[in-house]
Length: 265
Ligand code: DGL
Image 1: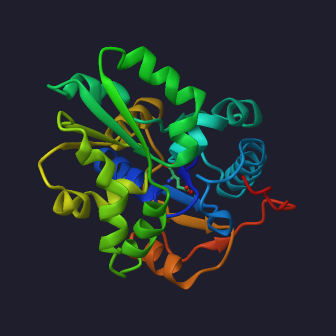
Image 2: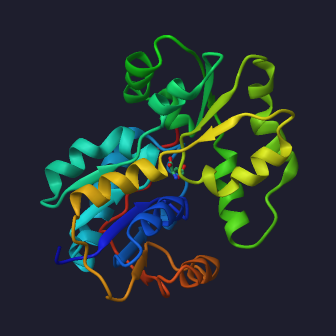
Image 3: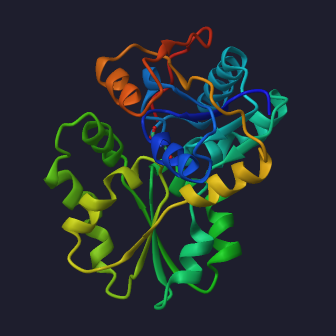
């Protein structure tokens, strides 16, 4: 493959997917792009998101020369995969909530999807649940404030305990719940904090390794030994430090073209 594996998210959430890809393909050259100027995605309108995601990914693919695009964002993947595949001429791998493995893992048949409000309400998500968890009781829980907490956590600031506890509280009302799908790529970054504030043990399931396996199957011989690079749509000191620490170097600013202000939901 002639180009890097390009990983895209609204913010730092995609780094949970990057870590899984690195584990499976340690020598592969990676590139990272985030639309931090428009973070968070989970509360923005669908039509605007499709346009924005397509513009950012198209420009990032162009400047990085990527061989494959990994959409490391559930909010983007459950909405814009079709548009991205139509707009790009490289393979596009999406990240969607791990409903299928969670339903297979659960012993009680009660599982939860923890994700952004956009993801929990998507037709794509309802379809996933119908197809793979029809025999389960599935609690869909929107937890948008956890996105900012994950960003803070990675920036070295403590995530707010009260926000974590309040966001997860509805889970514990389901006494039979034994498995929670981390349906936002930001959330695996807080997994240890979630487990620490959970009143009982549950399995926390994410899609990272499944995505990495898919990428490895597509890029059988990934580009190796080149410099990992990063792009962001807005400058930011904390983000630069996070990306540098993970070997991506300092991000360059990416201009995806005219940015229209999203209409409030
Ligand atoms: N990391 C993204 C996801 O997987 C969403 C975060 C956001 O709301 O921007 O859904």
